[in-house]
Image (cartoon, rainbow, N blue to C red):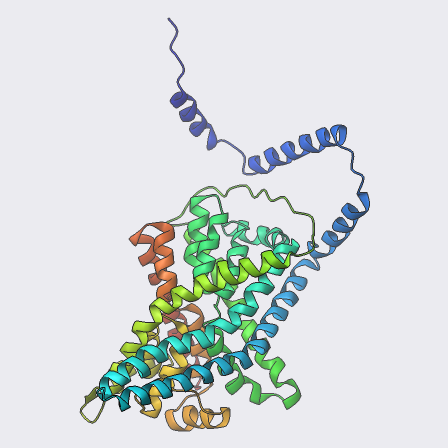
Length: 465
């Protein structure tokens, strides 16, 4: 009786043949399938709305062009940034004023009721202020960015972005859809990590998850914009200052994209080796965005979801900041004592101890980095608003010795450092692995230390700093 061939035999034989396939086998197979589909379609389907199809193809010839595709994408990205940055300032300030007015009144009411000062401070100037800061800083930009992003998605443009960038990601062993997860990361890295679900290959999905943090989220944009405005814009004429600041922020974003590609390349050749999967993406027809769907997806499914996770992590952070700023140790606060301990290492990186302390405290939410730095520099017991730009420049440069090196390295550190607690928690939930979660922190923090140390060393060797 002849041996029976089992499914396992077929799988093993297929696995053995896999290594003998040419590198372009999958692409050729996909091309063959689509050619057959097109042949059958032409025989079986009659298309009446030829005019609309022709319009889509004419648009696609421009937005997916090797010449115009990337410049158009960068212009759209810059426009979204500009609208988000300019549009979020006023509502952020209004929200902050309203929240802090309520804080002042509530703290006075609790004091009037006889509650001890430390309890009033802990509850209202610690926990509440941390929450208020995160909501007022995060909510307006998210409420602008996510709808704009969703409009591009609903319009059918985002798949074209993935199509334009596929060749770039394919070269580094990643997947073209990773560009879509990066786009989501501009709003929030936790949302970008969740968006990696669109990548079918587990290996390429992991690469997208581990590298998403190199895209600056809106929690880091306030720091980048502030530094660009304080240290870069003044070097240009008044009429060009805002464009110089915007160009600096865009430059930082492009550095993040470059780092994403380099780390993806390194991962795909070490711990995440494997064959690149074929990128089959059907470009949908352009369509008029649906307002109801945009509002629901961007505000309920994205903004509220991300904001709630940030709130959960910001409350304990606010409490810790208040405690560190109100416990006296040897004539200064515990926060100042820890900053002094970290200072030698911070100076080695071209930063200082206060900046490192702010980033340690701000692990739950990057939005509170600048207020925490201000709190420690000014010696007050709670997070505080940055003063006006001129006073802030005097405080940082004359009062605490900041230079252009400090500003550049702080931008690099803000771009590359470890994910916030919300994103770390999301990475664990998506990977179900402590190992990959731990690696996501080690890779980012290690690169942040390496980049700032190298930059500071080179500048000092050249006599700068």
